[in-house]
Image (cartoon, rainbow, N blue to C red):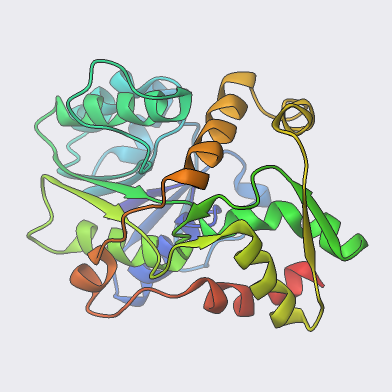
Length: 278
């Protein structure tokens, strides 16, 4: 049995599907099973990562866990998993985490580093996945694209290597089910470094429209974003974008090396998600 946390999320649902396709038993963890859209072959259980002591029944008897770094209690969560007999754990972290530093660069990195450190302090076999920007982050532009041809956003020249959620999931499935990935930290990127303007152009080409990005000041973006996200997280995201204007990402071959195939491009992702922008 393999537990998949965040099984209704953009990555978790592909992890669950990939495991099921290989014939593995999956226990999908979600806070609200009644609203979850999960393959019927999976066992669906209620659980909240923010309440680790309530996860014992879900974790007991499982061999491996795919873990989203969420919930605010990483040390206790790691302790509960180890006590329940979990042998292998794959953590979805972030490429913003830095090794061998006394302090992480921002709040996002701090949160994910805390989960990495908590898991690494146990005797469980671990693998850390550190993706670059999710291709799915561009879904935040969908309301503006549906309303018109102009997307207003900060730092349009931020250059990232957006990665398809299916590539992250494919690496996770292999780390959960195969030997040779224990103790590995995988930095995951898409095949190309492109700007947010480039991403918008590819979305436009996919849906047959000419779209334009208009830069707004970071302060204006912050005011909008803090309506639905904590200020520390918003500051971290905006700081990452500002840095990405002048510091392009380092591309990696991790997806191809682990899965045996090249990663999907942002154009591939846009084609698959065209309906989300129409």
